[in-house]
Amino acid sequence: MSRYPFSKAKPGSTTLGAILLYSLVVSGAFLISGEARADFRVCNGTQQLVGVAIGYRAKEGWVTEGWWQVPATTCATLIEGELQSRYYYLYAEDAAKGGRWTGDINMCVAENEFKIAGVQDCFARGFQRMGFKEYDTGRQGSWMVQLSDTPGTQESQN
Image (cartoon, rainbow, N blue to C red):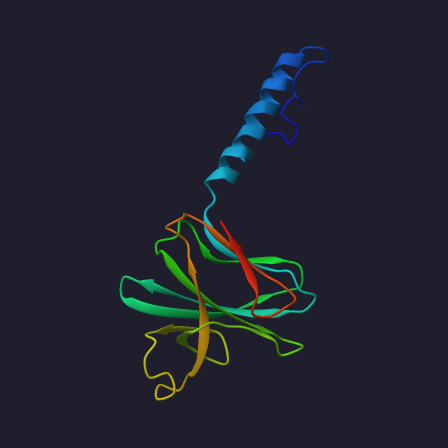
């Protein structure tokens, strides 16, 4: 297929109606695909690189995963697709200034990239224990957390 859908048409044979119909079909496909997207995202509203870890309940039990590196003023998708749990837990660190976004729920993390099953006996298993903040998604299909310049104060929205 040609890069230009009407390139093989004879001059003057393409009608305005055909062009409009094509444009509607293409733009409609983008709109439908945009509405169907569901995931758990973290947006970094700071001017520093932030490392993020997430915890959640899976079929096999508690899981923590990290580190996503989220550059200043960008967003990252931590979980792609429809959210399966009601509660998710987040921990983040400012790479430059040492600030932290924490909570009261203790979960395991590792120094490098990780996926850890279970939240008990972190130290005995060779991991660190950090306080994660709980987010009640209310069983929404998607969720977003906005990290601000003041660690410890986050806004969440779906």
